[in-house]
Amino acid sequence: MTTSLIKSQEIEVSTDLSRDQLKLKHIIKSLPKECFQKNSRKAWTTVILSLSMAALGYYFLAISPWFLLPIAWIFTGTALTGFFVIGHDCGHRSFAKHRWVNDLVGHFFMMFLIYPFHSWRIKHNHHHKHTNKLDEDNAWHPIRPEVFETWDSTRQSAFQLFMRKRLWWVGSIGHWAVVHFDARKFQKKDQASVKLSVAVVVAFAAIVFPTLIITTGVWGFIKFWFIPWMVYHFWMSTFTIVHHTTADVPFKTADKWHEALAQLFGTVHCDYPHWVEILCHDINVHVPHHISTAIPSYNLRLAYNSIKENWGDYLHDECKFSWDLMKQITNECQLYKTDIGYTTFDQYYSQK
Image (cartoon, rainbow, N blue to C red):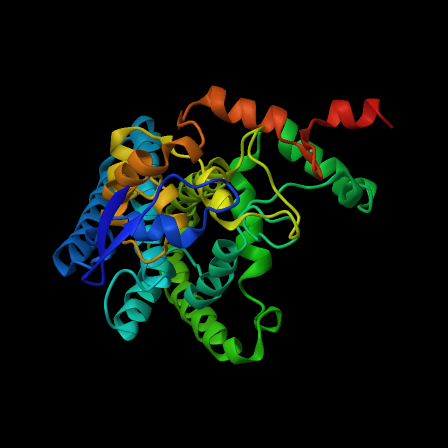
């Protein structure tokens, strides 16, 4: 038995449950109450850290000789990924107690990335409700052979090139462009919010991009915004695919989907270099975030330690970020057969 305090009430939760009995509420109730507590000092510390590190990165870009620019780009783009994580907390209302603060801070940080805040917030919350559910999960989801076969040859070739040539790191750019700017793809009740967020990033781009080009030239635009933005998308794409993709992580149809197991076993904990985890506010400690989006980023490690202690038997093995890991994912996880699992393009074509 494990005992936790939730909403000032003592609740006993048995961790000796069968897979069928296990519910998400059991895991949530087992977490220490501190995991859910918002701390203004810690929240605004992440803001100060991200702003100061991004400023340092841009200063580094401004003074660096050409041969140090790649280091400056990597550092600055990773710092900008921290901007997204702050917006991410705001989108889940775990940054501040007041909704208007979450909305204001979320719009501020995500406009630098040209990411419409409300568009992302609405679509991303759908991912949490349907994690690793076939036809519903709208984050990084596998392509089934029967879907692949409906595509024309150009689209099939593009997807094969994308996987075989390990172009996962641009995947989030397509998702960003296709999903987040058309208000008609959202319910009517959300369309006004979506249009507001799109207007914010359009206004930012309309002011900042011409100013950069006028003052620093086209190269200045590429140097100070575009390449750091591409580094941000490298991390965005990498985090997203690694969080839910290995050869043994199942995607289930709705009738066989198990909410708690999808969040526990279907979410992969991956360790990254320490400096990346600092700049990205521990977003890679991702299992607790899928147990409850109410856990702020600065409490993710506390929650994960509790989950490992109480529910470790249900967790997927941890991994460490490396080129070999990304090769393994892109080599093995190319197409997905319902109720069977991942297969490769070579296996798919050999069976036709």
